[in-house]
Image 1 (cartoon, helix red, strand yellow):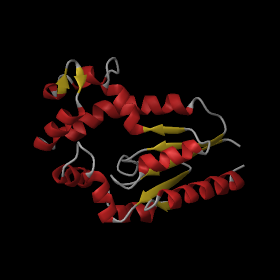
Image 2 (cartoon, rainbow, N blue to C red; image 1 turned 180 degrees about the horizontal axis):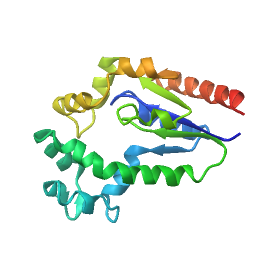
Image 3 (cartoon, one colour; image 1 turned 45 degrees about the vertical axis):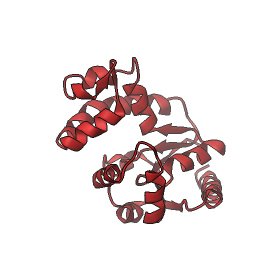
Image 4 (cartoon, helix red, strand yellow; image 1 turned 120 degrees about the horizontal axis):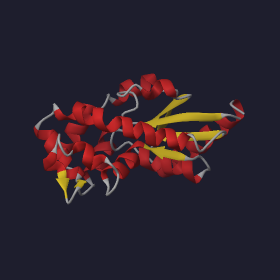
Length: 196
């Protein structure tokens, strides 16, 4: 079996991180775009040097402070595409290094903005995770770093959930952990059966 690249995406608060962890639990290596960005923004990650000239106010002690960065982008929306143009090539390098580690099996690529960045073309299939809007909102607003305004800002950057579902090869609803895990196990079994 050659590597099968399963793209995992969904809007904020729909359970991407939890679903990715379930794939890892059941033997599928997972790469996370968010984790890659965290590495880039940490000490020695290269992100601070890239962003120093563009958003100096978002740097704290020589590293990128994501809270400050989010606040800066909220004040000036024109910064987002400029930041993405700098950061996305490094994220792509990180993803390529991950993929180079595997020559068989199912690997999961967790990319929140998969459709928005047109990465679906490099996937063998795409899984969209979803949750009802009230559940989604409740999950997001329980995070200490998130406000209702933050949620609206992030949702404005993301393709609407219904549009993602129309484009998806697979959909998993994450209303309960048990339901999500059962769906993940079923999908892994199906992929292994059909792509062996």
